[in-house]
Image (tube, rainbow, N blue to C red):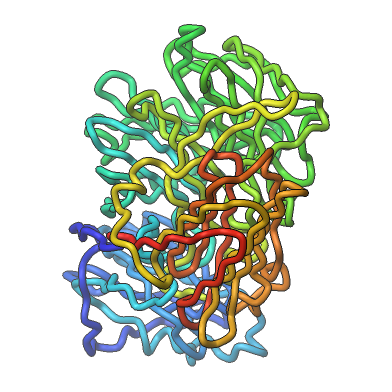
Length: 552
C-alpha cells in the first residue's frame, strides 16, 4: 500500500553516497570500538543475516550507556542496511559472538568498509512480496500487534518491532495510525527499552484525555510496566512506580487492560505460563489478583500468550494465543466463551473443547481495538508463524498484519462460536470487476455445493481450495504455491470445519498472502504464499467466481 512518509528515521529517503570510511579500534579478537563523527544524523549499519548478533553499547559523551542493541553486523557480505540515529551517540562499544576461527579476524570484517554516515534513510519498497493493502513496517522486523485503540477518528496500531534488522530482536513498540484501517501512516517509535528490559506485548486504554499503555518489560524477569501519553498516543512517559505487576513465573507477559462497564472496574488479563491471570484496579496503578483461568481447558501444546477478554452480544470471549500447539503446527489463536463478573471467567464449554479463531498457518497474536466505534469488536493478527517467521523470503521487512476483521457470535449445535468477517472497510476498497486474478484482488465465490477453486501461474505454481459439503470442511493446499524451500514446516494443507453449509466465500489475495472467509463468518483461514510470479489464472468447479480489483 502507499505509505505516507513522516519525518522520523523510518520515513525519509536516502541516497547512499560515498563517505569517509569509518575507522574502528579493534581491541581484541571479539571486541571493537567506533568513535562517531559529530554532526551526522545516521550511521547505516550493514547487516548480514546468517551471522550471530553483535552486542552494541551506544555511549554518550560521558561514556554513559544510552541504549544496547543486538545487530547481525556483516562479516563478509551485506544483505541490507539499518539506520542508527546518532543523537546522544558518541561511541559504539561492540562485542562480537561466534568462532573467530571460522569467521576470520575482526579487523577484516566487511562491516568496517560498509559503515556509512547519511542524513537520510531509504524506505522505498523494493520487495515483490511486500503486501499492497496490509499493514507492514517500513523496514525491519514486526510481530505481535500491541496497544490497539481508537480515539478521535484515528485507529492506533502499535507492534513488536526491531528497527535494527529484519529478524526478531531489540523489541520496541513501533507505531502506525490510520483513518480507515487500510492505509497506514508510520509514526515515531512509541516505547523503547530501558533497564527493566526490552518492550514486549501489551495494550492501551483511553482514560479521559490520557492514553495509558501497559506492556511487559522483558529483562532478567518479565514484569509489567505502565506508561502514559498526554498527546493522543504519540509519545509516552513511563510511570515512576514501574513495575506495576511482578511474578515468579518465567512466562509472565502481555497485559490486556480494559474498562469493565458491567462491574464498574478496570480489569487486566495476562498470560502466566499456561494460564491466564485476571486482576482488577480502581486507578490503573494498584492491581489486585482476582483469579486464574486455563487449567485443563483448551489446547496446552505450548505457552499461552497475548490474551484478550471482551463482551459480544451478551457473551464474554477470552482470546488465547498459543505457541506451539496450533491446529497445523506452530502458533495460532484459540478462544473460550463464557461469563465474566469482573473477577472470574467461567467457560461454558467442556474443558477439552478447543475452538480456533482461524484455521490457517499464519494467524497469531490476535487482539482487539479498545474503544472501537459503533460497539464493534475489530481485531488484527500477526500474519506469520513462529515456525518460519524469521526465514520467510523477504529482507527489507518481515511480517504483515492481517486485514481487519469484525467478530460476532453464532450458534451451531450445542456450542457457541465466534464469527469472523472482513471489516466493512474492506468493501470501501473493492474496485471494478476483472476477468482474471492479479497479485492484489478480492475473489467472491458463490457456492452451490461441493466446490474447488484453483489459483495458478505460468510457472505451474498453484493454491487449491476445496469445499466438501458432505464433510462440512474447507481446505487450502499451498504445498505447490511457490517458494516453500525455506522451511520444512511451510508446505502444508490446512482444513477448517464449516459449521454448516457455505453459500459464499470471500478470498483476499495480496502478493504473499491468501485470506479466505465464509461470508457468514463461520470460517476464516489465513496462509502465506510466495509465488515466483503472481497467480493470474483461476479455475473453479461447483461455484461461480467474481474477481474485484483492490483500490490501494
